Length: 276
Image (cartoon, rainbow, N blue to C red; front, side, top):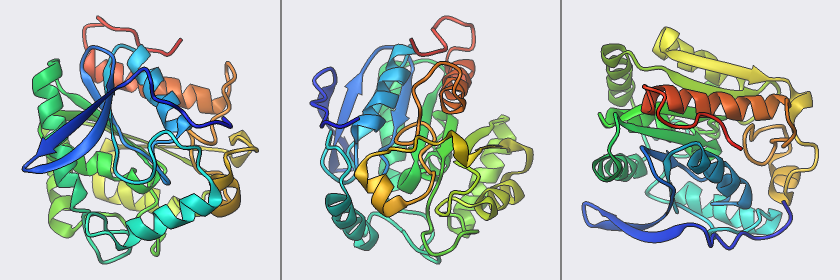
């Protein structure tokens, strides 16, 4: 994608959770799925994923957490967004920081979305900087379908998890108690989301962690400038590095995610399970 996205087919809302307001882009009908942005913001590729989720029979909600909504990810602009996020009190980008405080707001968003949209619960898709946020959101009982895509935090510890000890323990217990599974993706050679990190998730969550690894050769060789110039490695499985061709491994990953959401949120088969 080479142009900004006007986001004209979404409704822009201001959502307050415990007095804190953030913009949330909403579209579709059916059970809610929160699609989190990836660095450096709600890009056209993130919105493409959100539209696929919408078209699969869900109310998609995309919260604005950083960057310029709808903007094509550039190297210069993206570098500044990353810098600001790394020093923000809302995020814990480095080892030892524990759980990012913004996840409390996201759990409140999921809770409100479940009340509004109904269904058995809410799905959450994390991407890159927000990858692990989808798992932390499972501390909210409404969240029953967490998807963790190429989680990059903490940035300075390839085997670390963006969770403090108490939250890690509580997430593990919640998944065990309710029989939930976490679906996760990464590219084999991703230096921001390494095999060490997936091993740490598996050590924490056991069989509840379904981590899937794609070969680097499956990545889009011509992603937007931010990913080509700064990320510099296959990374974003279902967004910037997705190759939109029938049968392609990244498209199969997308369809697996949609099927996972459908199995949890449309348990009786009363909604579509794949993108058109």
